[in-house]
Length: 429
Image (cartoon, rainbow, N blue to C red; front, side, top):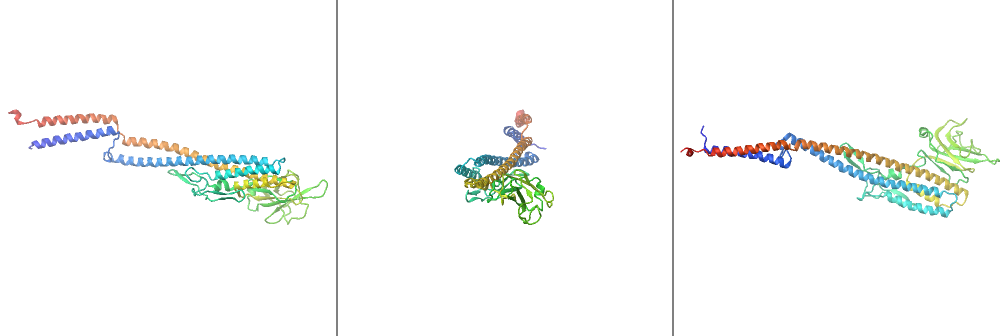
């Protein structure tokens, strides 16, 4: 085989170029810290690294949503804490307004302060998140949720939606609450039923909020949940007060099973003693799992209503309380009506406070979940970083060893090339 001078030169140059390329590749690995400079270096690892990087970027988006949800919920919780404090202040003023030593002028002064609290409540209900989005308007973040006044009432212009944020691959979390659930749809009375005194009552009878002794019976299919307790006082000395319980849907007496008869009524009344919606003695069998207590002395013809609880807004409760305090109470019946209305307002304020606490508890559980998801996200980020490091990062000990070897190979190639190209017959002449 003939070996020409050009072949010797080509082979030598090719060898040096190959060694130089290998040396440069290793130098780039050491300088960048990456084992894979191109996907061709390790196609399988490059594909796996791309998948991990995409998962890492997705997790970063979830973490951004977690932070946004946490900030929104924290802001909402702060506003609801202010609402709870406002309700406590209103309750204190209501108790103060029920004091028997106050004059009508004193009560009107308290009502004036309650009007300020009403405006404050309206402002809290229309709170924004700092970006122009209303916290309590449901999906309609750009719509003012509440508008109105003490006299005209308050209307809700939002919807029942909760704005959701994707905080993990399998979890969306509500970052807001509907104003309907927070301020409007609050169960009045004791939550099962509401009691009220007739506006025409002339006696000193005051009804309490009542108790659902057996909620299952109260919510039974046969319960019409609409009753009146009617009183009558005879002319005996001392007078005897009796009462009947009327089912307002059927029009019949629960105590006789027939249309209400004239006084005296079937049961004898004792102030402060429980009036049970359950049959006693020879009465027709019935049991609606509820009872009320009437204190004081009702007059003949006085009546009290027992109706199923319905939704009542916190604004309506406050408006009713203001109206009760602003009404004149010059006679005993006026004082009694005031006491009954304040008692009803206090019960409804307690329901509103419980509702706010329920919403805050829900916010707290969501914030706890966000914290847990944030911890999981940090763990995932660490795992992703470790996986990418294993796939991409260079082993410096191995790379530096190869760099030293390749430098030696290149030097050897250069020296051998010089020696081979130096061969000539003229050296032997």
